[in-house]
Every structure is written in structure tokens, then in C-alpha cells.
Image (cartoon, rainbow, N blue to C red; front, side, top):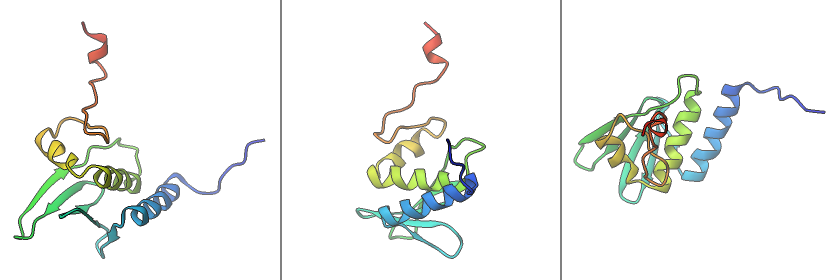
Length: 117
């Protein structure tokens, strides 16, 4: 027999984000963004953008690519985990905004590329 959960997809994503934030050391700001420090790099992460904040008050921004039906909490949690594991991913995201990258920094192959010769 299969048990059904009483949580919605958004509630499960919010719980996942809470656990990921605790694991990565990210702190939630009043506006809902998450502040993550990896090494000497400071990131602000929300469901639409990842920003790098420099000590000289300069910032760089990257738009987060995600599936349209993916809950925003899950998008933020994924970005936090990827940045915590490899903070240099941001540079690749910024340099190639139209492409998706794996957590190890390698670019996903185009799904149509496998069908072409």
C-alpha cells in the first residue's frame, strides 16, 4: 500500500530549501533572498537571479534558468547547493547565459544534439 503525503509540492520544496539553507550556511534576508558566502565570495540568491556582491559595492547578476513548473523554493535550493559545491560555476553561468551547467561545471549537452550527426 502506498501512503499519500498531505504536503503540496510547494510545501515540500520550502522544507527542502530550509534544509539546504541550514546545510550551506545561507541566511534568509527580510526580502526573501538568501545570502551565501563561499570562500571570500558573497552571493545573493533568489528564484530569478544570483548576484555576486563585491566589497567595493559592485555586483554582477545572473538570471537563473529553471523549469517553468519548478517551485521557486526548489530553484533557490538548487542554486545554493551548486554554488556551495563550486562557487566558480557563477562565472560560467555569467559567461554563457543561454546554457545550463552541471554541478561539476560541465555544460549539459543540447538534447537535440544527440539526434544530429
